[in-house]
Image (cartoon, one colour):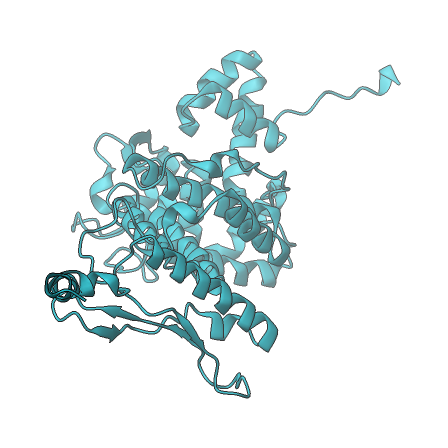
Length: 401
């Protein structure tokens, strides 16, 4: 070899030798040894050349939850082989574990869902947020079981959510499944608004037909029996029920009432409805007499607590359940069947009022007057409610048969 050729070869090796070497080792699978021990943790391992030292450095092993998800040798090996091949493909395409530049719009399912919940917490009521939070946690647990919790949120598609909802349906009811669909859709809408995902595919998942449990309407004789019992056994619960009966409030609206919401001088009360709007309602004289007996000095005290007017640090749903359970004791004592609740008093007295008004007014006039009293936001909503509780029944049609 001539002197100049020898020098060129040496220089070429010095300059380009490092570049001729691969930047990574071929990924391999550790499978617990020669016996493929399933009791050990399997993983994919590889080395990558450090950009500063030029030496191959062993990288963190990749487990991908496969040890927990796959208990047979065949399934575990199959999935780890797919993982190994995917990693090798990435390395060939130039992937580097030392690359610090973030991948654009790469958000894990967990972090994206947590982000959406944080925003929801600022825009909805505490009880609504609690529903969102609890259902999202169940969904996250499902994703974790599938090994998808740390994957890109964009990889969560309609098929995965549909399978999750089917699982909920199998273990509960169509109504519960629909509630999960509704809450997840609300959360995914936040992700769309913030460019985490392109569109909310959950809106395309159909709502199932369900049979909601309807609170029954009491007979007036049964109302008299319950009132008579509570006059001696539980006057506080009786007053609570009277707010539902005479002011047509929902039980959760009653537990929200504070002393400052009561204006005895003008005979009105202010109630916060489920849509967060404040509504002013007339206090019928039959209730004004009861309120005059109470200690209404502290404006921040709640009107109803386990002991009467006072402080009560508890979530609204818990407060509502407390009075519901308190009423259940009376139901048991009076042998009142299922389907009758505190809410049933609202249905009962709206029905009574509607029928009294119908004796003097046309159907449309009655509905217009009733709408002012019940607080329904639209006539359509009131009409649907009246149909649901069978407020108007036909006259006897025997002569037509």
